[in-house]
Image (cartoon, rainbow, N blue to C red; front, top):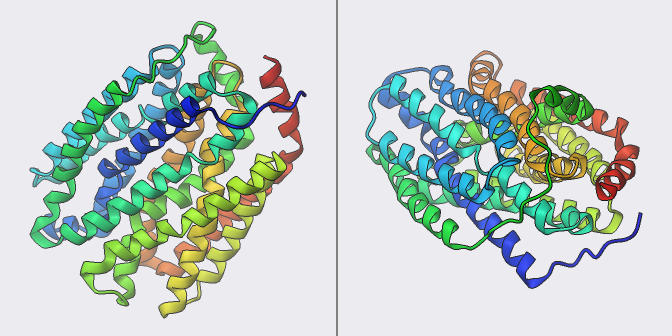
Length: 400
């Protein structure tokens, strides 16, 4: 395969930067609920397992939405699809802040999950239509910085102000910011060329999914851990009693800050070796080992090991959600493959919403970390099995 120019032009850098900034801002209206879960449980007088259903509902509708919007994103204008999602999630957050009923909260957060799913798959389509294969491999390792920084900013900012009766600010402020973001996104001028894609055929979905079956398994395993941590890590830090309540959001944000070196390590290794899958094997396996070490730890050591585990997981999960879909997708199908893989990751994350709460009640946090470690080691083993296929897949994509 001919070596392709991997350096981005000025216009391409602007496109990547706009996508990263917009997707990071989407997280303001997504992970904001994590910093107020304990407050909501008290406000509504429900258990942690019950309040955790909010996370389950979100991830399941987000997962279904990723599949639907992934397919849709291959057929319609991706810029308009992203703008629609930004508008809906902004309105949902504004309305959510006025609610006092768990049932209504569940309904609204389900709508939010679907709206949020209009972001990632169409954005990846924009990249595949503007970048060549060599550029895509490099750029795809930069995209995960968007949601890591978005989570970090959300938890640190809202965790400091959404305390006690002020929990409603955790939804009103993101709603206002996302309304502005929707307007700016439409004005950014990211018009995409019309890719030569085949017409949508329902009969083609199953064969396409079979072709990436191993990646579906890896996405589910890694998604259970990563998305489960987004829901429950602030609660774990609160339970540790090492941090005063007002600093829980800031400390939880640190677990996202430390993911940045992990993402950078993944980026540098892929840039040097041009091997996404082999890099994912190393990072998922190392993250699994770190969580197993974390299981019996206590006190300050547990927080240190947690930061290490989240750093490595950040790099590994970024490769699963961003790079894998782009190297596996046939021409014109990047949005569809990204949506399908993200669906698996988020449905598994939805299972974590209520199951982690129940597991904490039954076996404590050590049981949770042990389970996460085993799941990541399994994800690493499955990826290792297919690591030698990467050159063939990317060669086929480029030839197409």
